Amino acid sequence: MRKTIHAQTDVSVAGKDQLKTVAQVIMLGFSSDPVTRWIWPDTGTFLKHMPDFVAAFGGRGFDHGSVYQTACQRAAAMWLPPGIEPDTETILGIMGVSVDPARMEEIGGFFGQLGDYHPEYPCWYLPMIGADPAHVGKGLGAALMKHALTIVDAAHLPAYLESSNPRNISLYERHGFEIMGEIQSGSSPVMTPMLRPARD
Image (tube, rainbow, N blue to C red; front, side, top):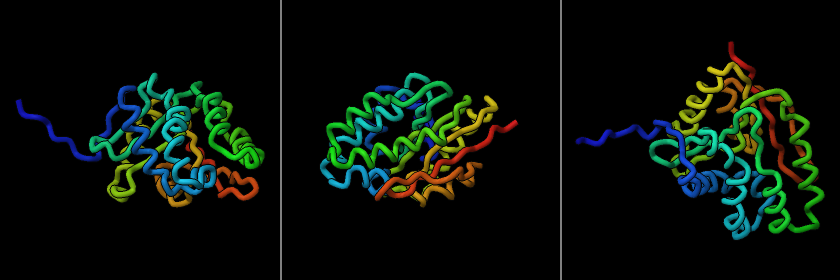
């Protein structure tokens, strides 16, 4: 039997057994992310703790079939359906052992603002999307967004995300997301919350 050859931009659901692969590619994608590297400016600390952070932030999507990856496994997106939230307890634990206590008030103030924008009504949430920097510009992120938003639109629900890198805002805007405001605390970079209204 001949094997089917998929285009790099084909998208499929990632199983829980692929957590390591998904976390690694997202970690690569966030290696120069302004917010992430503000939290963990030390390279070793970033490499040690980012995979666990990825799993805590978006890993619950594995239980709902809402973590996606491209066929080439060089890009992935972790979505959370309505009513499913990141593992806040684990995230706080990671921060507690990886961030200088002198910075926790500033970082806590930054994360505290996230709740000001996150919709309280049912919506899909995109905690993390990333691609291997060596393969950016090949349409991988756009393929992931298109795939997920087809599912979001079928449910006639809005979608929400926070863009931690200004370079990604144009991608999100092309897919119908609108800027809601800005999140910033002390020396932090700006994070941009964005909402995509429900489609009829």
